[in-house]
Length: 181
Image (cartoon, rainbow, N blue to C red):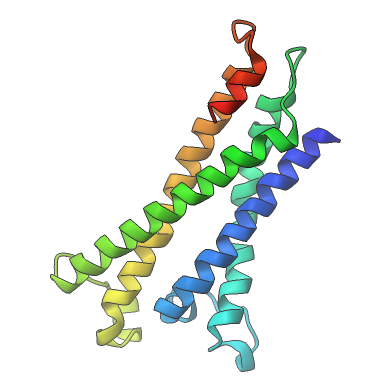
């Protein structure tokens, strides 16, 4: 049961991050969702950044939480070593989400500046579907999203490794190892 609770924690954390992230990015460039993604909302909600951010925040992230949640639960619970609790994983997961947000903001800013400087540009067929004055915003949002996925996957793998290592026999002071992450 605790194994599933860890997986659920990871899924819910990913969804929460995705919803907040997409609520912001949908307001920076709604076209990222309306042009760059399949239309899944009814026409009356299609131009709503709130609904786009909510629906895509769930659809685009739950699976990341599942993919990282299963190995996280294995690392925390498998075998005869001292087990990690769901609660002991909340802080490192929260820190990862915070780090992902910082990386997303920085990457989005870099993408925006590079687009403004014409170092990067939006390509066809999307370029002709997005008003030219919004290309820089679209690229900023794209870079923020890619950075969130990359930092989430890498950071998740790092946390999984740290959790596994914290349970190794040479870590006699088990409670102190929890404070490291």
